[in-house]
Image (cartoon, rainbow, N blue to C red; front, side, top):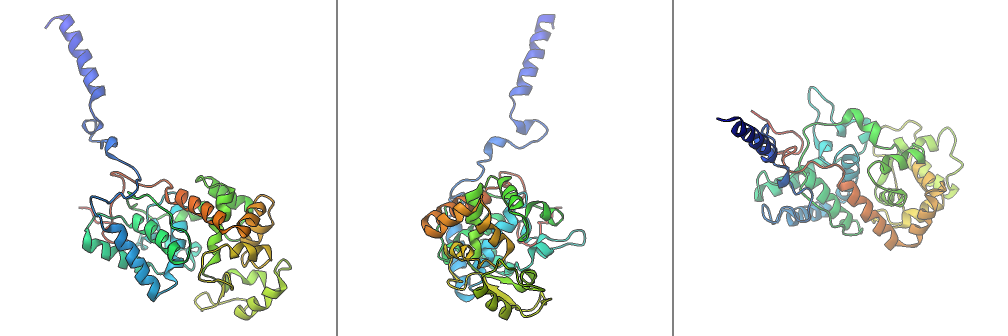
Length: 336
């Protein structure tokens, strides 16, 4: 073979190497086949998936009203920590503590009912629908059960294979954190100030355990608390050191405790917020204007709430061939 032919062959080989799809280079997957998150991702692979999840959420809510609060909390506790990949649902193993068993997940429950939803979907389409999509869609439908807005959410997430218990503190703001920390944590995932104010409107429903409140009552009552509300709080939380396993709670909103609405904002402007973060939200000059606006307009609250939930649900998901579709939401799949 002449020198010109050799040169041409070398150039051709280099050109082919660069033009071959990634599947031919070191066995990587073809990235072009990953659609990412899309609306109605399961329309071909499991057309009934979203209807099954919605029906299960309705049935569970009829039997156990507090499941809807759980679904709403789940999306925050899972998606705010690095990735919306159902790492929250994993059980502890001999090697690692699960997220849901840390102190920061205190009060989270009803995980067994998520298994109920997963089992219903598996009967229709085995191995197709991820636990992370079930977690997100159950939150969406739970919000509707509580009288909140319907929020169209994309699907196509896959499940992670590790818990993130050791880094929760880096991502989840605590109820005693400064407003600057709270705003910074959410800003890191793209949620702006009105979005943060709207997300905290989830405190409109459910209840707060006395463990998280007693520091505002004992040894002295926090002077920022509305005196009319203090008597009720003292009645519900009579112990300076409550038993965390005891049923000692205060309703977040005594007026409409089962309804996701803008009553929360009127309450915190009246110094009836239970947590430090509630009080700060109504007092901080960066957030107070939005609190006032949401107190006046439920439509505005719902609009910002829907936008914030959407951003939260799309935080760094695993899609395409990343992660897996768990057979059981509490354990990773076994690989031979």
